[in-house]
Amino acid sequence: MASVDLNCDVGESYGAWPLGNDAAVLRHVSSANIACGFHAGDPGTMRRTVAIAVEHGVAVGAHPGLPDLAGFGRRVMDISAGEVRDLVMYQIGALRVFADAAGTRLTHVKPHGALYNMAAAKPELATAIAEATRAVDPALLLYGLAGSHLVSAGRDAGLTVVEEAFADRRYNRDGTLTPRSAQGAMIDDVADAVAQGVRIAAEGKAATVDGAEVSVRAGTICIHGDSAHAPDLALRLRDALVRSGITVAAP
Image 1 (cartoon, rainbow, N blue to C red):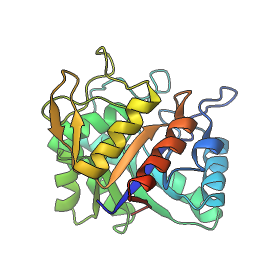
Image 2 (image 1 turned 90 degrees about the horizontal axis):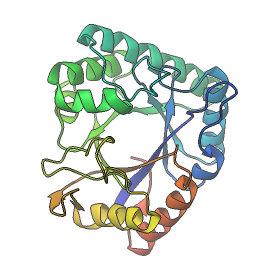
Image 3 (image 1 turned 120 degrees about the vertical axis):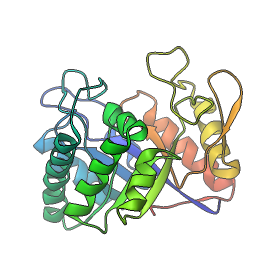
């Protein structure tokens, strides 16, 4: 792979409770997925995070999640496809206003947390997210788990889809992400996460949680901004990718 996007989930502070070091992380990534107030974030955080992204030339994307501040959007909800379509449209629209006000454009949409995993597994929810994205702006890119239903639904809707992989998450043999509740689901060691990110970009492969390997072909690699080592991981992963001859750039 000659080029890959490096994205990070940011803008997740809420009110008086800060989370992550967005200013440090956004120096090193090429795309930002900004929380839109449902699972995390608030209007002030959205505005400030967009401004930091613009300052560093980082592509601005919406990161819509389930309406679950208490659970950080990581708890599965019994929600209909129609409800998903509406809440995704609402959140994209909210962030687009801040992007417009900052003199930039919204480039992509990436669902968050449980919504992301639900859409990867359930075609009807994947279709709802794709339709919501297209309804707001058919030029928006849709980020989805490589090989998942969200990828195929986005293509069926006529969207440009960017398949995503993760540097700091373990995989199951079927290409799905190991649930956070399982031991070893997160790669906490920065060196190990850097190695996985580079291997995905260079070879299209990743280790599974049980020690096997799985094919993962992706145009963008994610790191999570809520971890304490996110700035270090962003810096070291970008440097390692460049040293491997891989350009880091937004799609």
